[in-house]
Structures are given as C-alpha cells and as structure tokens.
Length: 314
Picture 1 (cartoon, rainbow, N blue to C red):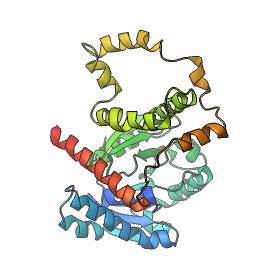
Picture 2 (picture 1 turned 90 degrees about the vertical axis):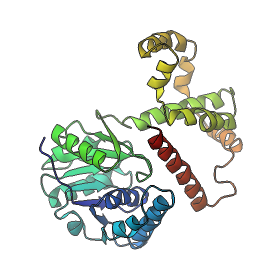
Picture 3 (picture 1 turned 90 degrees about the horizontal axis):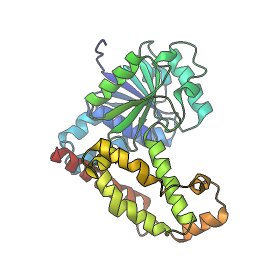
C-alpha cells in the first residue's frame, strides 16, 4: 500500500461528534476545516473546540501551548466546496438520518478529489445504504464510526464491504497515527461496539422485566462491577482468566451458559408503556443535582483519567 501524507482534513457537521473529531485532527497537526450550514452551531464550534482543548491540557493529555497551536489549525466554513477542496481525508458527521447522509455523500463524492477517503461517523447504518446513490468512486466510501467523544475515547470502527481494502487500510493507518484505536469489521448494522452494547442493554431490560432485580441493581452491576473490569479486560480476556487458557474457558462456557439463557429473553424487546414507567420510577437520574454541562465535565474527567491510567500501566 502506498503511504499517503495527510495535511488537510474536512469535518462535515459541527455537532457533538463533529467538533470532537475536529479536536482530534487539529491537535495532531492537521489543517482542519469545519463545515456546517450557517448557524449558531457553526458560529460557536471553534469556541467549543477551544474548551475541549483546555480540558485536555488541564487533565495532562496535552501541553498548554498546544491549545493555541491547535486552534490556529481550525478553519470554519459554510462552503462545502471550500471545506473539501484539496482535503486528504473527509469525516462526515451529520445526523443519523439516511436520506440526509445519502444526499451529502453524493455531494462529497462529486466535490472531493477522486482518491480521497470519505468516512461516515454513523453509529448503525450500512455504508452500502448511505452510498447507494453515489455514481463514481464508491470504493472510497467507508464507515469510520467513533466512540463518543472521540477526542477522549480512542476506539473507532472501519467498515464497508464495497470499499477497497487499500482505502480501509489507509484510513486504519491514518487513525492509528493520530492516536485512535481502530478496528476493521465486515458490513453489518451496528458494527461491533453497538452490537455488544445493545446486547447488554437487552439483558438489562430482561432482568428488570422479569422482576429479577430493579433498575438500580443493573446500574450498580455495571458501574461498580463490570465497568471497572472491562476498561482493562474484554470478554475473551475474562474467559482466559477464569480458566487455564482461553480454549479451556470457551469449552466450559458453552455448557455453563445453557443454564442462563432461555427463549423468553428473545421477547425482551416486546415491552409496553407500563414497563417503561417501571424503569423510569426505579431509576436515579445520573444528572441529579448537576446541570448537563456539569455532568458531562465529570464524565469526561472520569473517562480521561481511566484512559491515562491504562496508558501508564502498559
């Protein structure tokens, strides 16, 4: 694979995902063009990015001098042509709306240089659906799904069965070079992270629906239990730890799990308003006593400190 040099990146959409991607790119030395329709979102995005950079400096992830250096690389525009002209990579971050994404991908493939990869931040849609109306160079259209917010959580997923392997490998290498932790997977709704996450949520619903435990017990099991472990060890690592090795762990797991899962759990998504009321009444709001901004700052501090702890322990 021919090594590509990345100097300019275009971010399409300046919402929660877009501004965060912009921080990732700008702090890694890339000229970063932030595109959005003329709106308060566009007007305020550079200020929000500055706040995110200051947070990174306060938490010890970047040097203080990097704030101004990064801000100098950020350019805002309401011209799609200006944003993508001579871009080396394009990250689409529009709302999770299929017609909207289909429309923007047609425009991007018409305006962008023919060899430039276009990644979508979508969290569940297939890129084959998003790029269905693209006429030329469909092979450079991929899913590049981050974990929100990407400037704090490095995991991201690359997918696209119709995309060329060269493009996927190119974006994989690029993401690694700017500190992200990418994987590649086949095209499937939800990719890897959200399929695991939704399976977990389904089990959480089942436990409450069947009156096995209350909502607070499920929350505590994750935040005070599995969540602490899973920041460092995934499910395959857990199976290895529970046995002499992974092979033995998986052989035991098959027999062990027969006692846990029944056909009833397949019906868990068929719940009514009364069940929703039950969940809401038993849930302590995570933002209780905090504003939305205060909660996000606290959450981001916890995520950042866990990430730094992981990096220091390697």
